[in-house]
Each structure stands twice: as C-alpha cells, then as structure tokens.
Length: 307
Length: 164
Image 1 (cartoon, each protein chain N blue to C red):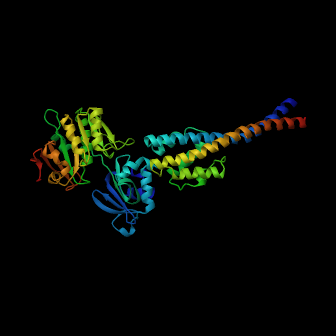
Image 2 (cartoon, each protein chain N blue to C red):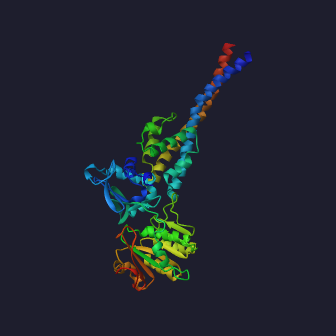
Image 3 (cartoon, chains in turn orange, cyan):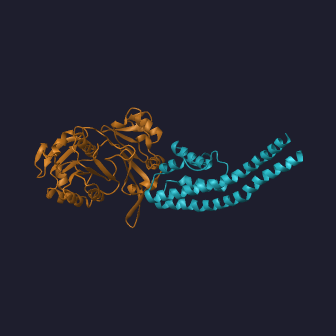
C-alpha cells in the first residue's frame, strides 16, 4: 500500500527490515530526517533501513514532499482538494496522510495548502479479534446493543477497534444493518483495497459525520451507526437524533480518560443526557489498544481502573 | 502480361499517393480524438472529480494509433516516475508540428496538478487550440489528402502510358 505513493528508494528502505503490518506512522518534515514509528518505537530512516543515527538518515526535501502528495492523489490534485482543505488525504487502503504547510485562504475560507512542510503518514491495521474483549460488553442480553463511546488518545487503536467491531457483528452472526459514517475513509479503507468488515455494512465516505449520519438514517435504515472521532459542531446533535430515532450508535472520540471527555463542552449534552450507555477507555499503556476501563452511562465502573 | 504490369504500376503509385495523403487524415483523426478526450476529461473532472489514472485507462483503449500512443507515453511517464519531456511524451508520434507538440506538452505537464477550477480552465485552453488544429487538419485532409490520393493514381497512369 505504501509502495503505491512512496518513491521507490523510500519504500525499499522501509521494507528492507519491515513489513507493512509493523509500521504505525511515517513522519516527513522539510529538511529533517525521516522518522518511522514501528510498534510505537521511533527510528530514523536511512537507505539501509531503520536506524537511530540522524546523521545517516534520509532527509525530506520539498520535491519529495510534493511528489508524495501528488502520487497519493493518484496524479489528480483536483480530486483531493476538499480533503486537503481539512489538512489530510486518505489514500486507498485507509492510509491517512496529514499535511502541513502554508494555508491559502480566501475571505477566511481555506482554499488549499501550498509549500508543504510536513507529512504524517498513518498506516491503518486490520486486527481480527482486536475488539473481542469489549464486544460482548456492548451486547445487551436480548441482542440489543448499548450506545457506546470509545475513548482513547491518538494512535491508541480507536479506528482499528471500530473496524473490528463491525466485523465482529458479522462474525458472531448478528445481522444488524450497520451504517459507517466514514468521514476520512479510514474505517472502510477505500474501494480498491477495502478491509474485510463482514457482510452487513454500508458506508459513506469523505463527507462530514453530521451529514453522513443523517444521510444514512434516511437512505439505509440502519440498526447501528458507527463513526470515528466525534467532537465537531453538529456531531452531538446528529447522534442525539439517531439515538432518539431508535438507532444504536458506536462512536469514538479523542481523550486520555473519561474525565477528559466529560470536560469536552461539545459532548456535554450527550454525556449529561446519558445518550451513551457504555464508555470504553483505551490507551497505549501495554501496547496499542490496551483496555483501560469500561463504564456505564452514570460513569460507574464495570471493568478496569479509575476514571 | 502488359495489363498486369499496367495495373501494378498504377497501384504502386496509388499506394504512394494514399500513403502521403494518409498523414493528413491521421492528423485529422488525432485531433478529433484529442478533442473528445478533452471533452470527456472536462466532464469527469468537473462532475465527479474522477481520478486521472481512471480516465487515462479508459482512454487508452480508444482512438487512432497516434492518440493511443500519446496516452501510453504519458502513462509510462507517470508509472515510471520520469520527468515529462517532449521526447518521452511524443515518442513514436511523427505527425505533429513543433507548435502543436508544445501546446499539448504544456497541457500534459500540468495535468492533475491543479484544483478543479484551474484544471478545467487548462482543459478548455487546450480544447480551444485543438479546435483550431482540428479545423486546419480537416481542411488539409480535404484539400491535400484527396489531392495526393488522386495525384498518385494520375502519376501512376502517366508512368504506365510512358512505359507502354
């Protein structure tokens, strides 16, 4: 997947001692050594593979950054301009490339990013059984699911967990119609190389979660809606609407603890109104996807540590 | 025996005439196909932001040999990560003038590098130039194409008369 848009010299160096599955992210900063994060450990990238010496590392140039973005767009920058305005591109296979540079704005509205100075390439993972520990806790005895909010800091496995939850419904033969509001195209992984998410899901990508959740409600009559990284304006209202319409919601949000999320003003209505019945907190404590705790709607603990 | 030789001489000059005329017809077909490609690309980029590789993959199956060659050359440039140049873009294409090559080259050099609005403007710019080239090529095909075809047969007949 990385080979599709990384220059050959770079992908050869990365794959010299690694496989796609081990890499968490690659960071390229203009005039700085390229950094590769493998199994949460950070290395520099040299022409002979990963190393810890920045002096022998490959340095990111302007041409390299531009070339990666152009290739990642499939030689079609016009097709990613809406994504670029939000600061990222999603490549087929669910790889998200965060982009930094000089913003070109018109009347306060972001038009594009030029003179790209940094790229953060996040490699997604498909881990079958990643959500095994929590799946049973989301199901009520009579096959009704609890509305659930997954909480974790960046890179702790929220999206991998959501992806596997969708698969687990199929695997355990729960024939729910699942609708995935996949704003960044990361959960499903694109059209060419989609992840195996089972048989019962529909998805819409590259549109705001608020719009896609309501779109899904109108068009696909879902039993469950799954979405990633809520917290923007309108997300809470859309989720409230879904839940009051009888649709189950499993969502994720950035945060290190339940306490963090309780302080988030954009989610206060959802939390105070007890729209979510289960809160699941993940961390990187013992590796990506460490289950820290499961909590009820009144924030009392079912499993794990303190708030 | 004489009749066979007569037919052979006329046919030979006829084929030479059609060969010379052929390049005029090829130019006309090339610009027709290029115009169609630009129209289709404009609507696909404008309506659904279809990726360039998808558009090019579809196009590589249609059109005359020179147009197909152009698309193939451009795709090789992309796939092999080469710097686009007049030489690699127009490799094995001999029917275009330098001015025409330069216009097409400028277009392909920037293809896919702009936002939607700018990309459509670039397509329209080449489209307007290509319309002019197509009209000229059509006139030339009508004028010189037919002339050389007929001339071949006439010269053939004349040579046959002189010989026999």
